[in-house]
Length: 554
Image (cartoon, rainbow, N blue to C red):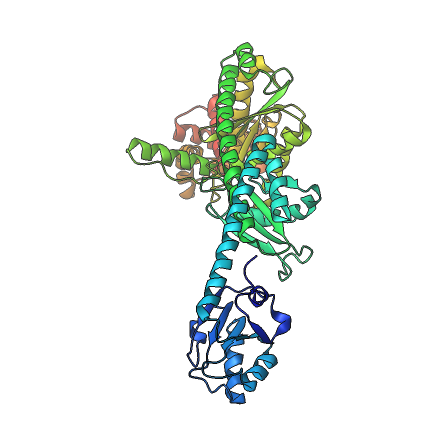
């Protein structure tokens, strides 16, 4: 405990007497300061015991003392020590009355007690308090380290909660609660998910304070909660929450800082293991795609449970932003420059898909294989399982939230595109990968977020041809016919459309156009002459029909 006015009054060597403010002696004293200025307030920081002899004060003037004491109390001075036997034989009644009126403790300092003795007593008490705090902090660090080695993060949280006389919680990168201590703190910790997510958007290391009795954002929780990011990368990998009834003391602060260091080490070690796991995942996927399922099972061991034995779905996903980042990194690497900083989530929107799929698989107890593949993401998940369902649901939600005017080829760089294969097995993994790629290509051309391979043949083929190259071909093929029509010498384009739509039936097509069939025959001969191609050729008819459809107004 830091020194208080009460501890100084009870100090046998100081012989101090309380003349006012007897009910406020438990206030901590930050320092003892001597000043004979008529207005020492500009030099006060708050928490001081001010020692005076009233050398430059008219201590017997009631109005002057009221103003003097009022300013001291307003500046946060916690007590006033008045030395008797120097300028005044006794503490002036005007000063005593002013101190009682403001509730400011007033201590009488006897002639034989020098101010230096009081300053030394305060300094010694502060030093002893700091030593106790440092000693307690080191003891807490040893205990936290021991519990971490013995019981992992859960043991550390339990020890930290005991050290701060409160509760502690650990969150993952998404803001979900991983562990709490004590167990009853789980509900309180869950309320802070949004705060943890906001903390994750700030560069590490980052911290914030939420809750508290005066905080209206969390009125249901009067705890004062400190949030700290964990990890050494720019984007935090996890977060620690520490809830207490009041602000942390020095010893508790040491314990929290030790917990942050230990959890960061644990997190970084977990990240190294995670990266090693990613390399194994990539190797297993390469073996499957190379047609070596037995080797893949040997390398995987029990990592994926029965995933490689049951029917699975192959998922391939990408986003324009990921492609752009990969291209920029490749260009800078080729130029000899450092790769651009991508932050803690280099996959962008793909990272969100990873969290969705892995979280769903974890809740359902499923194994899932997730492999970042350059600018793409490849996922192997159980057919009919929670991971595949979560992927489809996530894509559907993104598509529903996207403005109707927005296309994947348009302005949203972060758009996600997903292709799913049909159910397959390890022997046909390569074929499943091709199916997922085909579905991905169809999704991109159709402006969809997600397409399953079973649905590739659904709908019209025309949206698959809706790109600039096809439109340019169509415009080039029909240009001569349109130029002819522009001179007013016939309606060849409309005649071709009617004739093709009626499968070459002259009477039906002529009726649609409102002309005689001989007129239509004449126009078709003109089409052949202008194009220099025969309409008896099915390829010519197909190209003309696609050109008409590709250039038709929406």
